[in-house]
Length: 136
Image 1 (cartoon, rainbow, N blue to C red):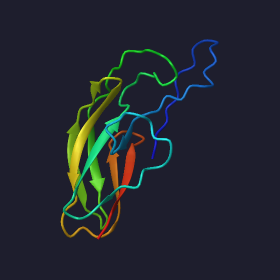
Image 2: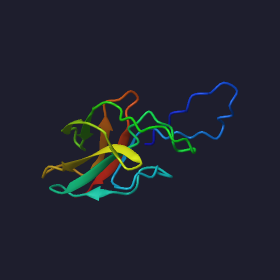
Image 3: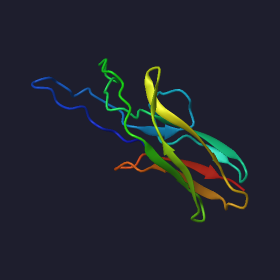
Image 4: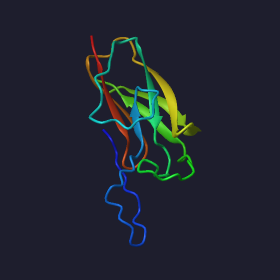
């Protein structure tokens, strides 16, 4: 799921083209906003998935602005597994890396986890989420 947040209207300025992608989580180290829903990622029980948080900044530079990248505060990230189990990945602090602000975390799907959809989420409101499939 991609969370979108609008840039503020500046007195009399046309902001109709503003996009301002809010934070997102995926498995790509490249901080390019996703163009569609979550990519097809499959992990088997006992396997790992490397998660990247992107866009964790209040700056709105996706429509040509050049605001300084200020990281948002730390976020708690967890994974709800098929069958109801929860993996707590802990408190992650976004950091500026080039033109992106984010974090990296690794989740290991426990052996014996049933097949289904796992949901990664942070504790922001609204939450940023990412889904992947746990396969047998």
